[in-house]
Length: 112
Image 1 (spheres, rainbow, N blue to C red):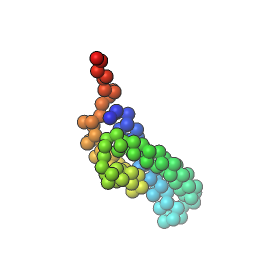
Image 2 (cartoon, one colour):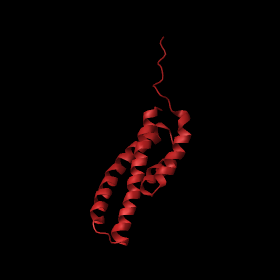
Image 3 (cartoon, helix red, strand yellow):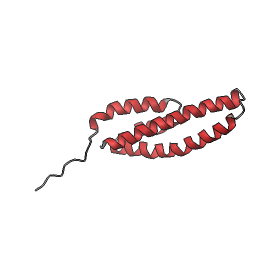
Image 4 (cartoon, rainbow, N blue to C red):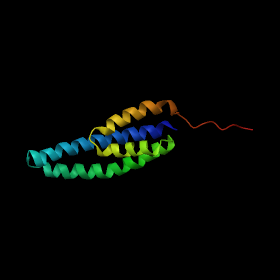
């Protein structure tokens, strides 16, 4: 597995995680604290998280298939983008486990 696959996943996991935490905070501001202007922020963050979560799903599925993860584990990775802060913990655990499988370049082709 190439290092770029893991790097793409890590970037999307952090992006999705940060946006989900921001979404939760903006919803608390909108519904719990009734702060003016929070509705606009909530709308923007929700749209951004929604679209980037779709990208996260594609990237996480690509990582799971290339790392040959079991289906149950891959589902947990895919769902981590919907639980606040879970993406950070899942990303850290996966990175530690997969660093040994990562190569910086493609395998050399043997010449006959």
